[in-house]
Length: 92
Image 1 (spheres, rainbow, N blue to C red):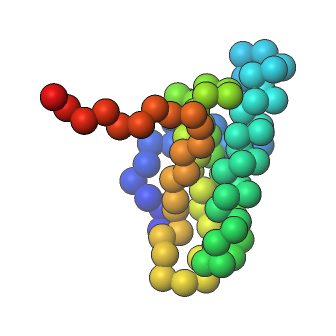
Image 2 (cartoon, rainbow, N blue to C red):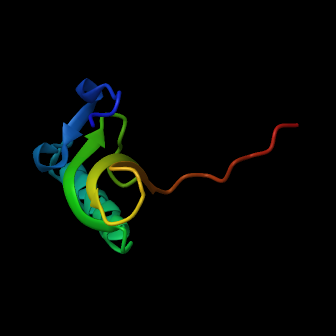
Image 3 (cartoon, helix red, strand yellow):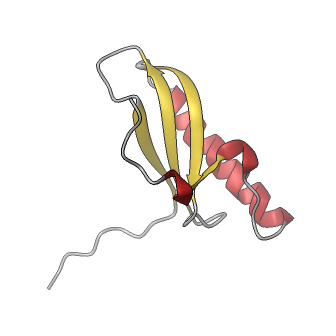
């Protein structure tokens, strides 16, 4: 089943190109980290598709959408966020 996601805001991971070669390498590294993270789970039998959100910044944050072949009762489409994000600051 196709999720209700605006795929116009996503780039297939195989087509990622940053602003320059360094940015591209950083984004590719973050995609690899997200893929490795997801593959550690037994319920993620296989990764079928990978997309990068257009708000991603190489070396800072990558928003990834994966379509997996699940081996358990989990969603087929999963979001993974990779990066150096600040902790949530409580409101005053």
